[in-house]
Image (cartoon, rainbow, N blue to C red; front, top):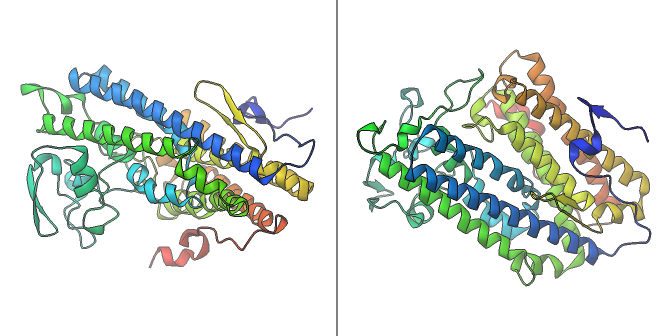
Length: 425
């Protein structure tokens, strides 16, 4: 069989997954939902395991600060993103995930809330008076008219007092991106190559400490990491047998199928193609990168796309190399319209090739920051290749709604795609 190739890799090798199997006999909606839930259980379990490894690396950094222990903690953070990003397709359709997700993956954030920032960052703004609060440097402060005792930086302080303080979404105090900032620091390279360059001495003990408050910085990092592990542990349990997320999904077969399609279409179109990719390119702004401190955005995009494909073909390759698979939405669509199934499967593969091209270019030294630079035609072509593929696959996802005779589904939108002029108003 002839396969398309990208940089010497077959499509199947690039994706790490085989093509969706053709069902020998019609599959039930219940079986499709069971596969979807089993994959969710595996993905959140993998995310928890990876976060626990990050937790161990953070503990080692705090106990024995060094260039090596900081590098190891950063590597653990990067590894933790691989399974987690593949779970984002469970947003939008699953209310339990959407209600929880802001704790662990909210972005972008006003990092001055957490720690010191460069002078160019500025101070409080009309939109956020706490944008430069710097909790690490201030053991007490006034928040929403109330005096806050932050002498002990705990998970409770972060989750219950600081996160989205005063109802402002940019006050992100918890989750992956708060940890990312504490490990890398600000990326001050603009649209040039280079990530954040926080020194390990920001966690050093005694006189070796740089930028002051190393003990409180370590306390914040530990609290945020411990909280991430706790939050992921909770969500992993929701997808186990008897868990609320699984029970809700399985309680209504038709609503469950709507959930799968809603998550796929909303992540594909408004969230990823629009807010995460097209918007940053329109603004030529690296601050719109999803993983902006670490310059890991190319991987975030790739694994988000792979998560969409996982949900459709009913297959997931776990971190340990084992495979979770079963009857899929692809099988259900094929029974109704084989041509549509072939069309959507092909478009999902094309999207992964386009996102893979961004990933490969970034890993070769052409960073995502550079791709966003005004006038960088090569970068724009790479990013728009991904955007256009995601938009195109969404058109076929919309056809699935009709083919399966689902209730009208409204996917998440984005001004960057639906009303570009509004972006600049």
